[in-house]
Length: 596
Image (cartoon, rainbow, N blue to C red):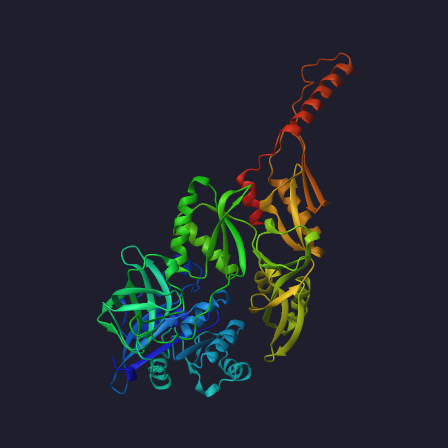
């Protein structure tokens, strides 16, 4: 189609502001989906996305719309995730568009991730069309939402469209606004084909299917193309678009979005954000590519060690579908063979584990999540460590630095005190506070990433009764007093329970781990000591009392010395058993402790 009749746009919003419902409505209104095939959350193809009501993967779809001026337009929508962990996915999708629909919930107003996603869109110079959604709700406050658009995001309130995706109100106006306001794509003027590969998935029959947006030239079957960042040259087998199922096309021209398949078998050969160009006359690289660096690491092990190869194969398939997920093999004394995996954040970690369990039927256990620490040794060498097992002895370390994040927390005015207390508890420091409107404030603070890994988001939600929201971006490293906490069972260190913690929190964490282990380690014939240690110093101790056979049951009356003799004999036996016996910690105990 002629480039003047093409519009590429994305939908950006905070989680649960109605992105996916709106995209369903647009598909239905443009006739891309017949009424009989219509279902809720159409673009969220994963069970997980439907259950949680969140978008995890970007989904491209091509719609044909006949506008009021009688012309037919090709609208290419890329539905993006809303959660902070997937912000690279969002930025990649935005770099394939010229415009963005910004959705704001009429009842909740502008939230933390709305602000972050608007900044991403502005960075890419996209035209932003604000849409105030859910106007049919009884507690919707449209004037408040318009005021926040102006005050917080500096977007003129009169440019906002009012809609209710659920009720189908305002859909026609949104489609007309896309046609009128979003600029058509312009060729880059390069010598040959230039296309951005913004996503990919694995098909058993076709191999790697790469999603592309053509910026210059045309892409068709039979062409030899080169992937600039990976340096691989391949022959294009098939090109097409999505509606939302893939359909084959003759070619993709300037401004069009779709997919291509080639003889690419391995996930590692396609880098996300890569530039696709003609192999004979290569063009320059398109902006938008960056290597993704995982921020959170965790060990994933099969519960049944025989499943190791099976898990390895499934991780390869999953990595193809999720380019941000990285893994490498590692072994643990307690858990056997497994993988050290890197994730963008905690939601990402949770999603990957859940997908391995559901889509691939794997029984897995994950170790305590940790972040990447930067360690300066006494000889000047700087190391990066994500596993407590590799932390050198303290006498070889000059300093340990931990990654920090800049957190933006939006909360009601009455919860400022609670939020400040929570940030202080998590070793954070305040930068500044902004008043957003009469009811809400935004706190900007600097926090260690390791402190917000586990329960930070949940605590914000519970303290603000669900009205608080947060977003964060990565700041720099900062020197900190971190130490390694070891858990000893019967004097032996168990590597699966080791973690790197701040000195001030080591004692309380050691105590809680020891208490948890006391509950889950089964009783033996002898007393089992559980200790938390920093180096050679024991900071917390618990013991599992011994199972005891009644050896004096056969003594009826008689002298007390007979009973004492039998008890002494039992005591000697237990002492000998303890010196040779090792405690067998069951797998369930690891799972219980790591869950907590």
